[in-house]
View (spheres, rainbow, N blue to C red):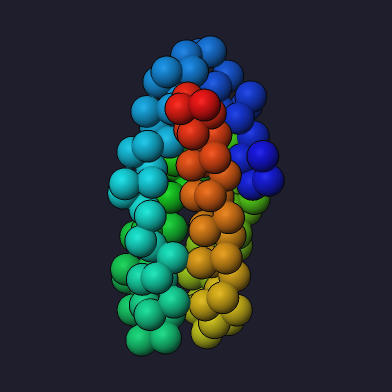
Length: 115
């Protein structure tokens, strides 16, 4: 699935697909609206909120196999590390696009349970 390496995610959870699916559901519940919030925070220069959520996301994305989104969040964190926060504007559109694509992939995978 585009944006989500399911096999890697399951492997990160010691082959426990049930646990992996639960982690995906929790991710969607916790971060499903972040695609709307992040552009607003970027617009308002609310850097503390952006940094906090980038740190929270970074640790979760890798374990879910969400490498594309993990890479975007890592780039965002680098802006803060190198003091170039002003360059974060490019993520007003990129962040919600990638997050929405990831959440769609997660939901499609989870719907497989229902089919």
